[in-house]
Image 1: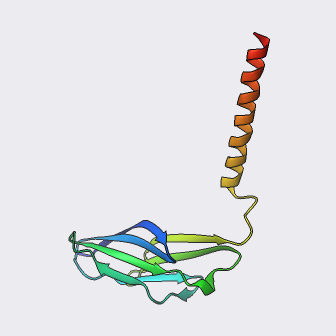
Image 2 (image 1 turned 135 degrees about the horizontal axis):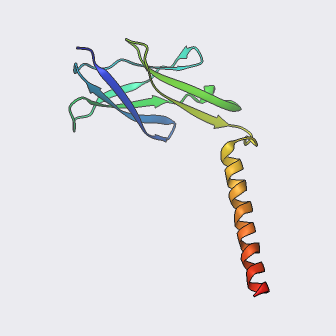
Image 3 (image 1 turned 180 degrees about the vertical axis):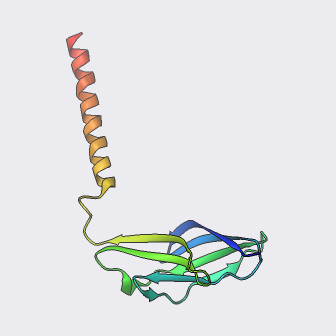
Length: 126
């Protein structure tokens, strides 16, 4: 029976992406590979979680030399099967004006302004 792997992000802190890898089926040490473009990253740490059977902690160092303006995407996959387990992106440089999050924040601010103006108008016309 082959193993099924599930990788869940827990956080990014101090230059490391961290996650929990759950293995169901065969209880073997999973082989994880992280790539950026076509480059395989070194220093990926997969260690067994003593608190639960079939759980592993995954730590991926984010190399400073790969961080440049724009969006950098890292893909985490099972080395044996090639299956993509997770990915994460790091955005650096100038803020992206077309970023949807910036647009939503702007819309919220405008909506709040309109609500205040409408309430003021309703009070003044009573």
